[in-house]
Amino acid sequence: MHSEYPPHAHNTSVYPDLLLALDALLAGERDMIANRANCSALLFSQLPGLNWAGFYLWRSNELVLGPFQGKPACIRIAKGRGVCGHAAQSRSTLIVADVHAFADHIACDAASQSEIVVPLMTGDRLLGVLDLDSPFIGRFNTTDAKGLETVAAKLIAATDFHLNRED
Ligand code: SME
Image 1 (cartoon, protein in one colour):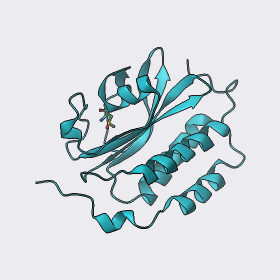
Image 2 (cartoon, rainbow, N blue to C red; image 1 turned 135 degrees about the horizontal axis):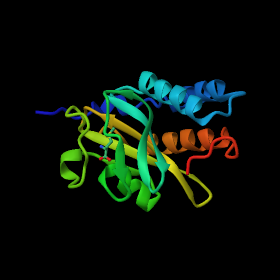
Image 3 (tube, rainbow, N blue to C red; image 1 turned 180 degrees about the vertical axis):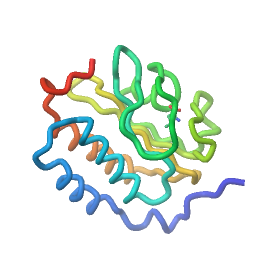
Image 4 (cartoon, protein in one colour; image 1 turned 180 degrees about the horizontal axis):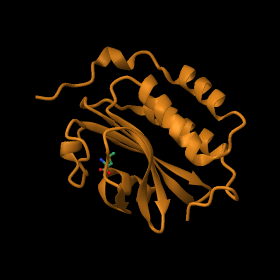
Protein backbone atom coordinates (compact mmCIF):
# COMPACT_ATOMS: atom_id res chain seq x y z
CA MET A 1 0.00 0.00 0.00
CA HIS A 2 1.54 3.31 -1.07
CA SER A 3 0.78 6.51 0.79
CA GLU A 4 -0.48 9.79 -0.62
CA TYR A 5 1.71 12.84 -0.09
CA PRO A 6 0.33 14.52 3.07
CA PRO A 7 -1.93 17.41 1.92
CA HIS A 8 -0.53 19.80 4.56
CA ALA A 9 2.92 19.26 3.08
CA HIS A 10 1.80 21.26 0.01
CA ASN A 11 0.88 24.30 2.08
CA THR A 12 4.24 26.01 2.45
CA SER A 13 6.25 26.63 -0.69
CA VAL A 14 9.96 26.07 -0.29
CA TYR A 15 10.65 27.53 -3.74
CA PRO A 16 11.39 31.17 -2.78
CA ASP A 17 14.28 30.11 -0.53
CA LEU A 18 15.35 27.37 -2.92
CA LEU A 19 15.55 29.81 -5.86
CA LEU A 20 17.67 32.24 -3.80
CA ALA A 21 20.02 29.38 -2.88
CA LEU A 22 20.22 28.39 -6.55
CA ASP A 23 21.15 31.95 -7.54
CA ALA A 24 24.02 31.83 -5.04
CA LEU A 25 25.24 28.46 -6.36
CA LEU A 26 25.13 29.59 -10.01
CA ALA A 27 26.78 32.97 -9.43
CA GLY A 28 30.02 33.22 -11.40
CA GLU A 29 29.91 29.65 -12.77
CA ARG A 30 29.04 28.80 -16.40
CA ASP A 31 29.86 25.07 -16.60
CA MET A 32 26.57 23.25 -17.17
CA ILE A 33 27.67 19.95 -15.63
CA ALA A 34 28.89 21.62 -12.43
CA ASN A 35 25.75 23.73 -12.24
CA ARG A 36 23.41 20.81 -12.85
CA ALA A 37 25.28 18.68 -10.28
CA ASN A 38 24.86 21.33 -7.59
CA CYS A 39 21.27 21.98 -8.67
CA SER A 40 20.32 18.29 -8.32
CA ALA A 41 21.92 18.23 -4.85
CA LEU A 42 20.03 21.40 -3.87
CA LEU A 43 16.67 20.04 -5.06
CA PHE A 44 17.21 16.65 -3.42
CA SER A 45 18.21 18.18 -0.09
CA GLN A 46 15.64 21.02 0.02
CA LEU A 47 12.46 19.55 -1.47
CA PRO A 48 10.71 17.11 0.87
CA GLY A 49 9.37 13.76 -0.28
CA LEU A 50 11.79 12.88 -3.09
CA ASN A 51 13.69 9.71 -3.89
CA TRP A 52 15.40 10.97 -7.08
CA ALA A 53 16.25 14.38 -8.59
CA GLY A 54 18.40 14.96 -11.63
CA PHE A 55 18.93 15.59 -15.30
CA TYR A 56 18.84 13.75 -18.59
CA LEU A 57 20.85 15.45 -21.34
CA TRP A 58 19.68 15.55 -24.97
CA ARG A 59 22.52 13.91 -26.93
CA SER A 60 22.44 12.44 -30.46
CA ASN A 61 18.64 12.24 -30.54
CA GLU A 62 18.16 10.53 -27.17
CA LEU A 63 18.17 11.39 -23.46
CA VAL A 64 21.35 10.35 -21.61
CA LEU A 65 21.71 10.30 -17.83
CA GLY A 66 23.31 13.43 -16.37
CA PRO A 67 24.02 14.74 -12.86
CA PHE A 68 21.57 13.41 -10.27
CA GLN A 69 20.93 12.46 -6.65
CA GLY A 70 19.29 9.17 -5.73
CA LYS A 71 19.74 5.54 -6.72
CA PRO A 72 21.46 4.61 -9.99
CA ALA A 73 19.04 5.10 -12.90
CA CYS A 74 18.54 3.94 -16.48
CA ILE A 75 21.14 5.59 -18.70
CA ARG A 76 19.46 6.13 -22.08
CA ILE A 77 15.82 7.03 -22.84
CA ALA A 78 14.52 7.37 -26.40
CA LYS A 79 12.45 10.43 -27.32
CA GLY A 80 8.80 9.59 -26.73
CA ARG A 81 9.56 6.81 -24.22
CA GLY A 82 8.82 6.98 -20.51
CA VAL A 83 7.72 10.07 -18.66
CA CYS A 84 10.99 11.79 -19.56
CA GLY A 85 10.76 10.99 -23.27
CA HIS A 86 7.12 12.12 -23.42
CA ALA A 87 8.00 15.47 -21.80
CA ALA A 88 10.96 15.85 -24.18
CA GLN A 89 8.75 15.14 -27.18
CA SER A 90 5.91 17.43 -26.11
CA ARG A 91 8.37 20.06 -24.83
CA SER A 92 6.10 20.75 -21.89
CA THR A 93 6.12 19.95 -18.18
CA LEU A 94 4.55 16.60 -17.35
CA ILE A 95 3.17 15.74 -13.88
CA VAL A 96 2.32 12.09 -13.28
CA ALA A 97 0.38 11.67 -10.03
CA ASP A 98 0.61 7.86 -10.10
CA VAL A 99 3.35 6.34 -12.22
CA HIS A 100 1.54 2.97 -12.23
CA ALA A 101 -1.29 4.61 -14.17
CA PHE A 102 1.16 5.89 -16.84
CA ALA A 103 1.47 3.01 -19.29
CA ASP A 104 4.95 3.88 -20.55
CA HIS A 105 6.57 4.75 -17.22
CA ILE A 106 10.17 3.47 -16.94
CA ALA A 107 10.75 2.18 -13.39
CA CYS A 108 14.32 2.92 -12.32
CA ASP A 109 13.55 2.75 -8.59
CA ALA A 110 10.63 0.64 -7.36
CA ALA A 111 10.05 3.25 -4.63
CA SER A 112 8.89 5.88 -7.17
CA GLN A 113 5.14 6.56 -7.08
CA SER A 114 4.83 9.99 -8.71
CA GLU A 115 7.00 12.05 -11.02
CA ILE A 116 7.45 15.48 -12.62
CA VAL A 117 9.55 16.18 -15.70
CA VAL A 118 10.43 19.68 -16.94
CA PRO A 119 12.04 20.10 -20.39
CA LEU A 120 15.10 22.35 -20.63
CA MET A 121 14.82 24.48 -23.75
CA THR A 122 16.67 27.41 -25.26
CA GLY A 123 14.46 28.88 -27.95
CA ASP A 124 13.15 25.81 -29.76
CA ARG A 125 16.25 23.72 -29.02
CA LEU A 126 15.85 20.87 -26.51
CA LEU A 127 18.79 20.61 -24.06
CA GLY A 128 17.46 17.85 -21.81
CA VAL A 129 15.00 17.36 -18.97
CA LEU A 130 14.86 17.88 -15.22
CA ASP A 131 13.27 14.82 -13.57
CA LEU A 132 12.04 14.42 -9.98
CA ASP A 133 10.60 11.23 -8.47
CA SER A 134 8.71 10.78 -5.20
CA PRO A 135 7.80 7.72 -3.12
CA PHE A 136 4.41 9.43 -2.48
CA ILE A 137 1.43 9.34 -4.83
CA GLY A 138 0.42 12.86 -5.92
CA ARG A 139 3.58 14.55 -4.63
CA PHE A 140 3.81 17.18 -7.40
CA ASN A 141 1.44 20.05 -8.21
CA THR A 142 1.38 23.28 -10.20
CA THR A 143 3.50 25.06 -7.56
CA ASP A 144 6.23 22.48 -8.24
CA ALA A 145 5.81 22.89 -11.99
CA LYS A 146 6.17 26.69 -11.74
CA GLY A 147 9.10 26.46 -9.30
CA LEU A 148 10.96 23.86 -11.33
CA GLU A 149 10.36 25.72 -14.60
CA THR A 150 12.03 28.72 -12.92
CA VAL A 151 14.91 26.45 -11.84
CA ALA A 152 15.27 25.30 -15.47
CA ALA A 153 15.24 28.90 -16.75
CA LYS A 154 17.94 29.92 -14.26
CA LEU A 155 20.16 26.99 -15.29
CA ILE A 156 19.81 27.85 -18.96
CA ALA A 157 20.57 31.53 -18.27
CA ALA A 158 23.74 30.41 -16.44
CA THR A 159 25.08 28.44 -19.42
CA ASP A 160 27.50 29.54 -22.14
CA PHE A 161 26.44 27.38 -25.06
CA HIS A 162 29.63 27.93 -27.05
CA LEU A 163 31.53 26.44 -24.07
CA ASN A 164 29.04 23.63 -23.37
CA ARG A 165 28.02 21.84 -26.54
CA GLU A 166 25.69 18.92 -25.93
CA ASP A 167 24.69 17.81 -29.38
N1 SME B 1 10.76 7.24 -14.67
C1 SME B 1 11.45 7.86 -15.78
C2 SME B 1 12.80 7.26 -15.97
C3 SME B 1 13.89 7.99 -15.27
S1 SME B 1 13.92 7.71 -13.62
O1 SME B 1 12.65 8.12 -13.01
C4 SME B 1 15.20 8.43 -12.90
C5 SME B 1 10.62 7.75 -17.04
O2 SME B 1 9.60 7.07 -17.06
O3 SME B 1 11.02 8.37 -18.04
